[in-house]
Image 1: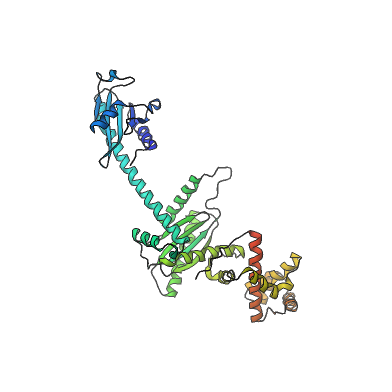
Image 2: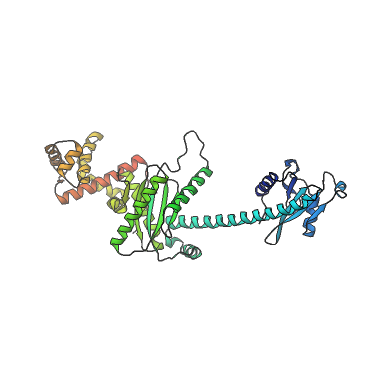
Length: 411
């Protein structure tokens, strides 16, 4: 371990508030790296040289000090850590009290070094664990089996454990305050603060939390195997999470449930389901705050269809409804979309569109005339519904510049 300039100066600053003597800290080469007198930094220190040679404290008395230029009486003591001398601390005073203060400062410095080292170790472990969780989410298990297996052993995880995977999206979580410069350190501070609050508030054994810009990911161990019990577990967790997010964040957010992995090997698949749930919910303007992967399953499946085939299909089915005049296109598509979203209810659709029931029936009849498919017939309605999804995928992705990975299709 090396005694950094920042840590050395921090020790000096703290100590000098209590003891009004000149205090210096030297590196193993006897060069002053921190001092209560900034002008001394960079100078050679004779007392420190003797300490490094003898491994013992050294007192520069009134008789010896005049032999050297710019040297005052004082005591120099080794700074030890794990049986290694990392540097020397010196107090410039010829009084007897300097020896007492010297021992106190030596002990305090070594204690601070030990605390600093422990903190660094904890931070390093935390960083390694965070990196592991991020990669467990974003990388397929089979892409680096040896790494994941090693990390699971190091972190004492159970590879066969099932996890509920949940993603929270909020554009406001890390948004900069207007008029203030947003530094990378601000992001890290907010991320750590948010993670700590969530760990403190969510009392679920073994829960793991990972944060990325715009997203919070939660991996919650699930100890029930019966599907009906799993659904109860999901509902309870989402209810708890939603309550805590409102209390702690006070910002609008959307929660996506990616599902329950059968083991840690499947976490990546359900992470992708959660991400696509959020992306597709945004793309299709779904208003629900809590949304399941099953809610966008059809849209997700539609993404696996090559772009040329998507276009060919919707052109064959709803091509006559797509006019160069966007207003006309919107008129037909919006009518059908509302009708399908309301489970093909004539009464509810008419209310939602603020039109008379007969007007809606006329529109549906006109759609049949134009396309050859009747929205009130189940098989025709299924074709029309899928065609609208494929059309929206192509057009909305183009409008929003939203992209989806080509290899996303995992089950």
